Amino acid sequence: EKELMVLRHDHMWDDWVQINKLLSSSSNAENNNDSNSNVVAAVVPPFREIHRNVSSGYLMKKRWDVETREERLWLCMLLHEEIRTYLMILRRAINLGESDLLEAASDVNDMCK
Image 1 (cartoon, rainbow, N blue to C red):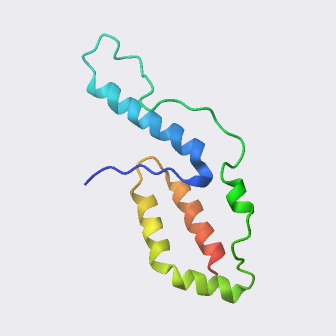
Image 2 (image 1 turned 90 degrees about the vertical axis):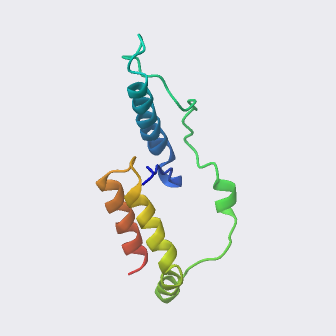
Image 3 (image 1 turned 180 degrees about the horizontal axis):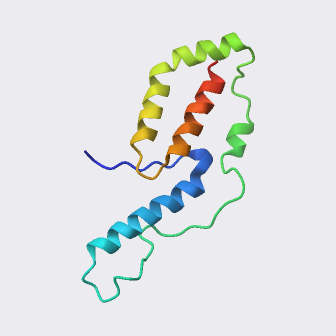
């Protein structure tokens, strides 16, 4: 089974840092015979941390609102399989921890109750 790494929109920077650490350590292990093997180099090119939502312009546009509890529940029922698949993907991701999974499940629970 292939290893899976996930970049989540709301946790982009933290996920990116964790993935880079995982890739760096596996690259370092593969090159163990190299004289510089104790130096861990970035595998993924670094980028600057952005402290603003890069999709804020998109999000600012009013697409449609879920205003009532009934609408939220209807949407959750409609997207049940997609939500389930999303949580399964998060569960398989090697760069996420137990707290990330609990947070995602809690977010779904809060939205769909």
